[in-house]
Image (cartoon, rainbow, N blue to C red):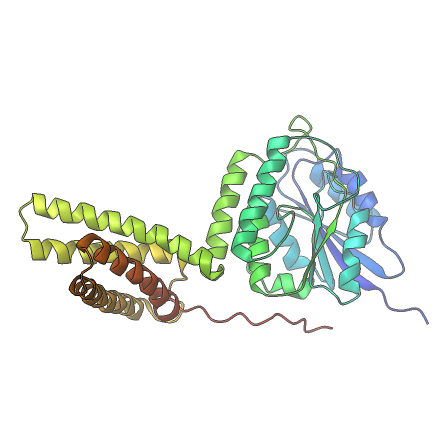
Length: 373
């Protein structure tokens, strides 16, 4: 008795790809075999060429195809999000319409998922013995740098974070809320998949990159957005050393604000006691705003009022600790500058731990398990 085929949804985001879309679809259809059936979702991102006409013609030609169109151009991330909403397959992948990636590799990437070994499989352009077109050195270096930075924040050891080829269990990707509309969705997906603590595999794929003259769209601003996304989506759950380094940066900025305000108040002939207290608590407010903007998740446990109260309570307690510690070091004969430096270092560590575990505590991420095994 023949075994039932398992459905594989492939999303093809398309913007002005009338020249390659049909050939891309033909190559995708060719990977269907006795194990998998295909659902091909073409999402036309308000192309200004004939991409939509081609997509609609292909929809009538192939029963596997569903063609939809965005009312306005929103970007690749938005197109992928639309495709995920529609997808009904057990597995899901993304295939660019420009054929920089060869769809035959999707069938290999699917194998660990079919075998029940993986929840996500990434196709690496760098971890491969397959053919690849030789193009831009600095572009390649930028990709490797972004991957390195992403790995630092996610604690993964991927070789190609920016790859188009990411194959998922559909139930997993549907549980992830994606927000990025453009190429920033690549580091966003990696961050949020890593936080699911699911089984991630990586395999080499072939790659035929395009030149900008041939229609390549990604540019410098996309690289800058990727940097922001790596930081923004990973920081609240980044490894402890990374979070502490970010907090050192935040604490350093708050210290500069503290010093500037203190000197300003003194210049305005404000009493020393008031200048110290005012500068300290205004700097603490700046620290709080930077924490919720850059590092910790706002309202992780408390409502805004309780969160602020908890924050300033921790600040006050550690302020007392700083005072007592500094005086203790002075009593034992330590010079004033070293006494204050050591007390501040201890205070920095305690401030970080107090914010992470008391003010902005993150719920532990349980390991993701598929419901449909």
